[in-house]
Length: 503
Image (cartoon, rainbow, N blue to C red; front, side):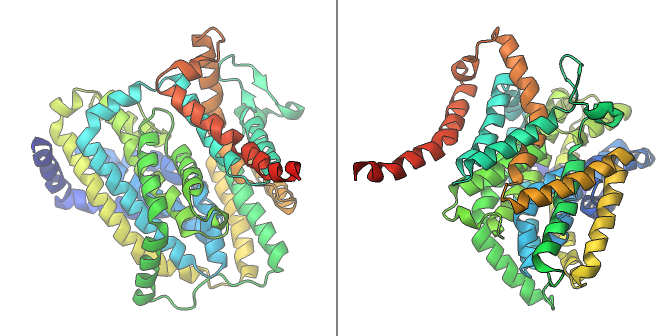
C-alpha cells in the first residue's frame, strides 16, 4: 500500500501544468523523431538535452522520458507507411507492417501498433512500480554466459521456425554475423575485415545503415519490380468507425503477440546493454514460434506487428530500471538520460529511491501519463499517416529514396555510409529474388556485437570450457532450449522420411 501511495503522489506530480505540458510536447516531438529514418530516440534525446537546463531536474527528465516514449511509438510509422524503420527498435515491425500497408490495410497496422505499444508500456509500468528493487537484483545475476545464452536463443527461434529454408536461414545469420564483426575487435582492439583498407570500415557497419539500406532502398526496388509501380497502399477513407473496426480486429488478432512482447520486452530491457531492439526481434520470433499460423508472419499478420511494438515500448521502460536502481544504463538512450541526471546533481543507485523519492516517483508517475498521452496523440495522427499513402507509388518511391539518403546521412554524416546504404539495398533486392530471408541477417547484426564479446568473456571465465553454458542455473536451461530449437528442423525432416524408409 505504501508503494501505491507513492505512485499516486507521483502521478499527481506528473499532472502539474508544467509537467503535463512537457509530457504532451515531448510525446509529440518524439513521435515525429521516431518516424524520421535515421533519427530515433537516441538522437532526439541527445539533441534536446540542452533545452532541459531551463526547467527543474524533475521536469527535465519527465520531458526526456516523454520523448523516449513518443519515439518508441513513432518508429512504427515509417516502418508501415514506407517500409523504412524509423529506428532500429522498429525493424521487426516492418516484417508485417509493410505487407499490411501494401494490402491497403495501413490503418490496421498503425492501430495495432498503437494499442500494442500502450499495453506493453502499461505492463512494464506495473512491473517497474511493483518490483523495481527485486528485478534490478535479478538483472545483476545475468553475467556473460546468461546473456550469450539469451542471444543464442534468439538465433535459435529463427532457425527452428524457418521450415524448409534452414540452410538459407543459417546463411543469412552467418552473413549478418560477419557484417557485425567489421571494424575494431571489441576485446583486442585489432581491426577486422577492413575491406580495401577503407577507413570508413574501421567504424564498423552501423545498424541504421543496414536497416535503411535493406528496408528502405531494398524494399522500394522489390516493390517496383513486383508491381511495376502500379500500386495503391491506402484506405480511400479514414473514419472513426473504420478505426474502431481496426481496433477490434487488432485486439482479436494481435492479443497473443501483444502479451508476448510485453513480457519479453520488459525482461530483456532490464538487462544491461540489451535494450529494445533485441527485445523486439526476440518477441517477434517467439510470437511466430507459438502461433497456430506461423506462415502468416511476413505476409501481413497483426500479431507480427503487435509483438515487436509491445516489446520495444515495454523494453524502453524496463531499461530505465537498472539506470535508476543501479546506475547502469539499459540502452543507449538511458545512457544519455543517466548523463543528464549526473549533470543535474542526481546520483543514480539504490539510495536514489530514498534520497530523491519525489523525483523518482514523479518520473514513474510520468510513465503512466506519457503512455496514455502517446496512445491518444498517435491515434489522432493515424488519419494523417494513412492520407500520406494516397499518393501514387511513382511519387512515393522517389520520396522513400530521398528519405533513406537523408536519414542515412543524418545518422553519421558520412558519404561512406551512403554508399553502403545503396549497396545493402541492391544486395537485399537480389537476396529476396533468390528467396533468402532478410530478418535473420538483421537479427544477427543487432545481436552480434552483444553475442561475440559475451561468448569470449564466458570462455575466459571458464578457461575455455564450453560447459559453463550448461552448468550455470540460468544459462543452462536457456542453452538447452536453444539447442532443441536449432535441432527441431532436423527432427521434423527425420520424421517425414521414416514412412518412406519403411516402404
